[in-house]
Structure formats: structure tokens, C-alpha cells
Length: 89
Image (cartoon, rainbow, N blue to C red):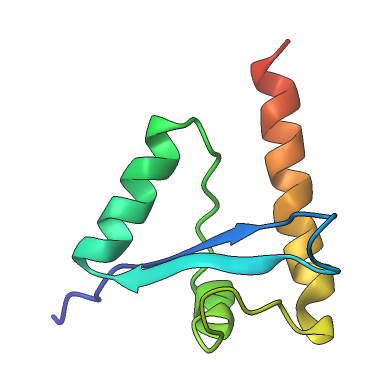
């Protein structure tokens, strides 16, 4: 059985700078592990979605997500919002 290589994509949204979320960081293997580790260190919620990672991996760092991914990325941000709200209860 072949072990799949771990991938991670970090998204961010700065309303004053961009009209859509953009790719802040991305990587495989060790780099993916570091992205995940940094997210954990800063209590940033992580959502695992292999299909979304596959789509987002086509983008470059600092590239805004395309309009056709707005809906799915909005679901990710809603997940993060709910997780943050639950943590502060």
C-alpha cells in the first residue's frame, strides 16, 4: 500500500487588501507538517478536505481563489467561525 504524501494549504482573507481569500502558504511533506504545526501553535482551526486541497494546490502563493471556489471556501470560513465561537463559550 502506497502512503499518500501529506499536503496543506493555508488560506487568508484581508478585506482591505483583497476582494477574495488568497493562498497564504502551501506545501507537501515536511512543509505541510510545518504549516499544520504553526496553525496548531496559533489555535487556527484545521479542516481536512483532500478534494479542496487538490483544487487549491493549483493556485500560487498570494493568488486569490477563483470565483468558482467561493462557495466551498465560504464553507471553510464558516467552519472556522463556528469553531472559534464554540471555543469562546
